[in-house]
Amino acid sequence: MSAHLRSQLDTILETLTPLFHAETVFGDYVQKSMLSTKPEAEAGPRGQLGPDRWGRGSELSVKRDAAAPPTVKDLQDARKYAKANISLKEAVKGADRAFHDLESLYDTVAKKRPYNIGLGLTPPLPINTSALEILPLDYPFVARSERQTKRVMVTAPLTWIVTYAGFSLARLRALIADPNRSRDELQRVLTHHLLLHVVMERKSGLRGLLQALNFPAKTETMPEFGELPLTVITSAVKTERPPDDVILESTDLSGVDATEEIVRVTNVAGMVDARRARLLEIVEAEKTGANGDA
Image (cartoon, rainbow, N blue to C red):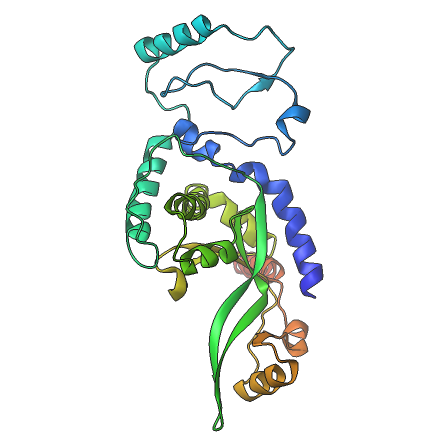
């Protein structure tokens, strides 16, 4: 069941990926657009659409025939022109506000435990990818019985954490646990999580679209990641954690301190199509109105 539903969600997110591009919300506050998933060599030559507020060429560009590379003087003249004549007007409506929201959120999350990053955000932010990745939610749980207590990792197979590709919670968890971690790398991973959250908040239609497709999205936090808002997609099919004694017995037999939530077949059989129910309500309301008019 989880394989079937995940395959559906993968297809949906692959189709919607262009809507999640950070540049469509943050404009030239981010360093690079990933509007093509192909490598640069495959995507072909790109035309510059003009310097942005930092005097660099926009990557949000179109294909064109190859032209002679600019000279050093050409580049210097272009930067001088940008600084002297290019207005700092937003290339994307609302980009200034979106970056302000990101900065506020970053200050709330990054400067506290478990991150304690003293670095601030300096635009343009380097964006490694705009492709999306989903992985089942894993969370720690302490199972107890009269005889023993054991900490295990539980997987919720029909609840997925959505991140930009390569910036999973597992990578973030490993960086938090590493005493020799790079502050720059931790900041980069954390920033990608926050970017996705702000994109989802600024594009409220994305939640409505996923809801209509029976994959509702929501924001959650987990104690081990502090106040970091995580983007979570769930399924209409609900899962539940097995009883503690079942968890303890199964992990003792397997020798692995990990388990999965399960689906009760009765829950699937009793599922209600919310859209069908709403349409039936409308039909009944129209019937009542028609009878009243008569």
